[in-house]
Length: 274
Picture: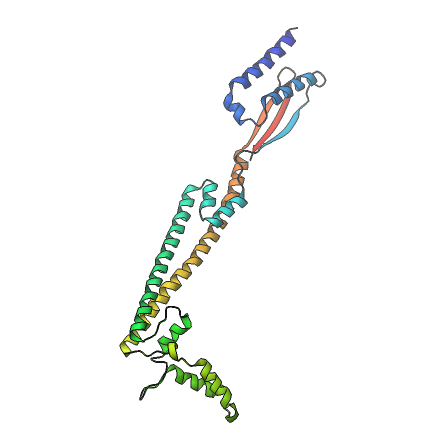
């Protein structure tokens, strides 16, 4: 009779312990009802076996974070994957790098646009030609040649170079027709003709062209920097994610000892939160 009373008191103590300890309930991976049923089941079987040890493993998924999701975040915006994993300082570094990269890119693109406008005005004024819709190849022609066609006592024109190339490609007497066709297809005439008014302005054009191309190329290189920043952030995020999972596994392993003290019935539970 006394033994049954002690058992009843022990069960009531367990119930009070689970009802009052809210923090223990939040951390425990098994519900209260399940634990109570487990305790009653152990007591019911205690009479059949005096020392029935029980070894169990309990897994609780709490706070798990996806490495793939973090990597995707970093690919979209460098630093967001680090922020997702809780590394806010590292995230701020990548955020800052991204802001500087695109801010500098916008600056160089704007400078390139200004330089191109300067080129348009300059060539209209000093070479009598509109280059607003011209490709880079044509801009290079204006850089290399002072005029499209020879003038009296002035040689070195672009069309002179075309005739020279035609004679090189079609040197024979029977190639006269092909040579003439090549010349007509490659001559710069009409709206494509140009003549620099002074040598000084021709040289100044080269400076403006270099300034324009330099700003435009730097803007292009910065897109590569943005891609590289994303690659570094993705690699960093994957490394941090693996480190995070190892840390979660090591920090959230604990052993819990329980059982029936009257029957020497012990249970050992390995709890892993991941």
